Image 1 (cartoon, rainbow, N blue to C red):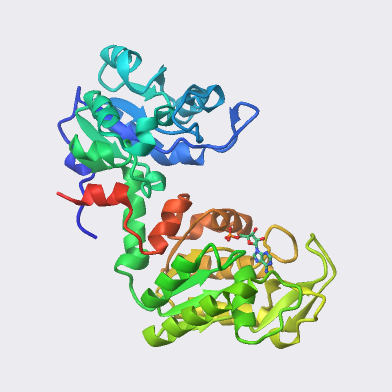
Image 2: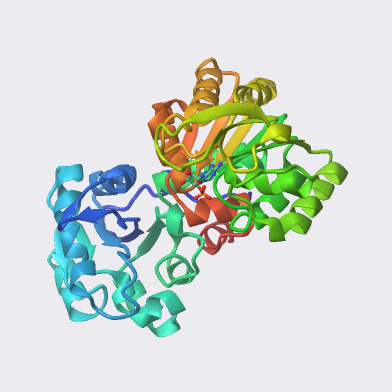
Length: 399
Ligand code: AMP
């Protein structure tokens, strides 16, 4: 990955207006922020800039308001939680461009923090419209992007601004990019990937890319059933996309050509109902009963997976090995996660995980903090795993 500038390159910024793109798209229940993880992630960048005396102007989106103001998607709802996490007062402007923004900025002292209203209240944001971007750019001297999770979108506040203002990666963006570089960019080999989750259909690009990059690919979760079925194994009532048999076979072919070992389950935990503590049994994959579904990979498979984790110097992980939300079908995911965490703690493994359910699965296993890096970016992390260029990152690394 080409070099990008970081906050280390921003020294003399006292009094400068720094537009900082952050991810404040946090879950809200009954009008209250129910999980502040994303705010905590961007806090170091905001604090560092504020401590250096910059006027810190936060840009963010919240929800999908489709280019118009929507009351319950106002960032004013998030401002108190931002203040709480930062332990510093945060002013709010009712629009991200025009008089409300410029008036609020005019009142700022060095080190002050201002949150501008949801950028997606304007159609120009998602369209990356030149006029809107120029309006945003007027309010700043410097652009810092700390929202890796929005970097797969070429929007005005994630990509456009970098064409108007000197652009830098914030600390979270920097950490994410450095971790991803270690994961797949320039990884220490052998590299093992674990991909699980429900369906092949949502992860075709990801699987196709990984088999050309990693030394071994472990396939688990519901999607393993599609691969097993494509090889003539009867998977009973298991979640399975039979129409993707050709796709699955072609991914296996690509893997063979690229020299990537494919690790599929050899046994599974099957049940007749998709519910917690459903009666279950462990069978080899060749003996899945016609009326049962595989809800987790079995102990022999876990041993195989853990063996690959031991061989690996680098591990990238997306998706659970089983239906981890319901016991006892969380066992394989928890066991492999614990093993990866132990190897990481012992300094033998660089482990990078991310994407939606993976974070909950690792939290469920209680090991998220032991991984080298856990990305909270959903779509952006997956697009990175798919080998796609992320516009918000590309623009930071050019020029
Ligand atoms: P994804 O969002 O694609 O990573 O899928 C995650 C979901 O896959 C979780 O909700 C799991 O419960 C589900 N899942 C994992 N393994 C299985 C399985 N063997 N059968 C059904 N669902 C599964």
